[in-house]
Length: 158
Image 1 (cartoon, rainbow, N blue to C red):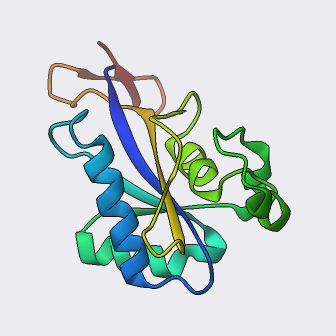
Image 2 (cartoon, helix red, strand yellow):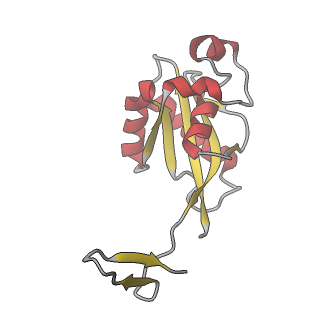
Image 3 (spheres, rainbow, N blue to C red):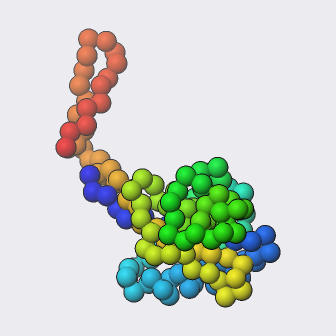
């Protein structure tokens, strides 16, 4: 099974943030790290569940799937950035970095520290994770074995 790379843009933002704040942060993230990954830089957006609606709006606008992470998990993640404001408000050094890492899954890593939108209302961070792809099923990969009972057993062979 071949792993595929997940490129997750995680967001953190103030209650005053607008969709434009998030758009600018995402574009800045792509500009900063776009040369590293030539095609399909971001394949998922992510936000804490409490911050989801604005990021879902961005996802619809850019046609990118959005992942929600549990707010209570934010404090369990080590981040590159250590914002005092973020630590007091959310228990993490960077909401954007924590969200990106949580959404990207185990063994995820940040490409760099979070970026801040021009209006300073939103932050975005890029994390890389790995999703295991299952091989495509075809007729040669499947065998159906019969038993004494009417139950069929599906055996997957590689």
